[in-house]
Length: 550
Image: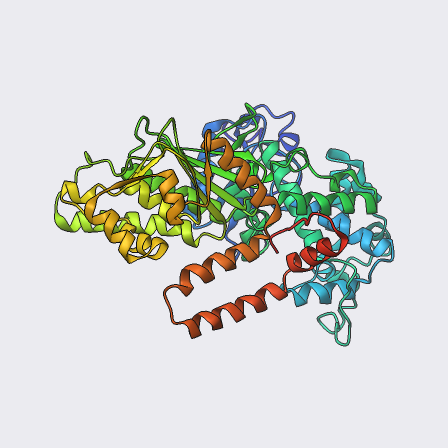
């Protein structure tokens, strides 16, 4: 093709494993060679992996990507040429894993397939290999053993089947007899020797490797696995619902059990950075941390394990504008899904927490002001609803909207001399980000009316006497708040904390009888958690519990 076509003609390969760079070696114009890996059957499957070889020009790569979109398919970019690209690379360790399961006599193919089917998947791994062709699987692993790791040569089962010409459905026999058109899995009991976490951990590990190597982005990996394997979710979604420690522990277990280095946790997981990688906060080109969302009004950091800190960064008064609300909304949505975080601390840059709303914000009419008020209420409400403990670190001025933000948190730690209050009525306004409702529930109607109607200001010490403050400190409230947060994050069971705060908040809005029903249902949920078992075991063994949030 290189000889008989114009140099401007794009040459594309549908290879599913072999590096495009390897295919284009020796051509006169290797810059025009690109990978377009369609998935089978291509008339049905939407996914196409667009692969950039080492010599592929950027122009050709983008043109191929746009071509895939024009023909109604969904392209994903493989930005660095690698064996197996995205989908087949991620499933490669699984192919080895399932070989070793049979090879080591851990479970039979039919027992594993029935187990996988019971998890909601349409086909088990051995049935799928029979369907694809065991020779294809064998050739793929042989290629990976040369290109990726010698571990892939440890599988003998597939080789033996290929030598016997038992290639699966196309030869009538493989792991199964296909003479009746499908395997007979009736009366087969599922194995209890494997778990879904085995498979998920291997997929997550390989997905992280692809990101570390610069092969593909987290979003493209997720899309590729979902569409290429016809699943409702991919490894990135699964990783967001697991902790780094869970994945790391499982990978160490598998690596030791089978003696395979490719099962060993990749660098980012070993260093506890799994979530940073999957949420795009690490660039492996420069090895620098960057936010997954560009924060201008806030600083978001993770000062200690299991604790996130959100700092309003608008010194010197840290007033709250629409930008602060938008960014706070965004970061709370991110932290809501973050299984690594148990406690969130809210504070302000410099000497003040927040002196309230930015009064210079332009609002055109009364309905816009209504919506602006509603937006603040809804964003602040997330602090009371998010399944994490939220702590406000109060210092300097805590006024108006800043006070309302603090009231929305579960707990408040304050310096003795901080100043709290609602100056709204002196400006012709009212507390409109939840203050009129939350304050009365926390300190009673009489005291709430006194503070709001007189616009009086109280000290942190007075607020502590009112019951508004959980902990009073004499100095350095920020460091004390992090210390307090760390203690809670490591001694309180996350699921229990999430349910407890909801019971208290929602129970205050309903009748006692409804609240008691909510409490009993929550107790039922807690009874089934791993954390309850861990908590009781730790108590009986007189040690600190290690809660997993499950």
